[in-house]
Image (cartoon, rainbow, N blue to C red; front, side, top):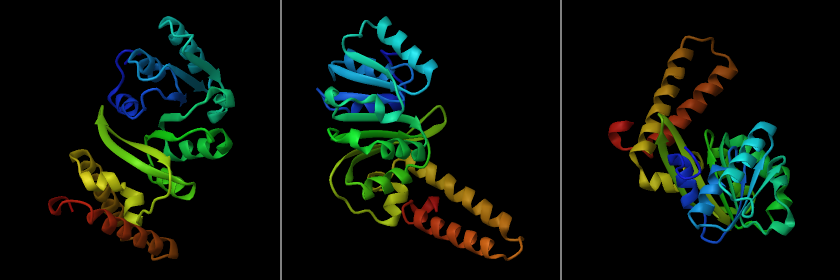
Length: 235
């Protein structure tokens, strides 16, 4: 992967960036995504934010190597603090972290999202917490993608300001992903059901404590939720 050729998941993230947007890529690492967006003519201005000194220095080096110092500002900052009011940022991308960490970044400095109209979030795990955050904070899910790369499965959530309603099942699985039922979606949740059933089997012989009873109830509920969204042969 480099600034000219992104990974499959980052290419998918890039595909949701509106033409002409001013982007802040939080946790930018080598700044490959902002560089790619500039090279492709999708955006003319971007911010690359990185909280760790090593990746920050890598991003500075990469931007200089690509000759994009006039278009991309690299900042050493904690999360959304990479954004300044004068930047006019309207699109934020956060990719390659767990869902809870992404939510903690969004919650830490919500005032820095005032000019932002689109969030493109790629959690490695626990996309559910992002949907819960969106519901509670006036964001609606515009689109969702699930894909597989290097034997790992990733979800991408595209949020815009607005209200929405989601069922418990849609919060867990993703309304758009449930509607599409792609092969990767089916693979992910079939494996999850198998894992939950293994855990159920392992606690069958355990002492019947209140914790065990609660865990069994939770797992059975999750299995039923997911089964309802899968083709019959994968239940």
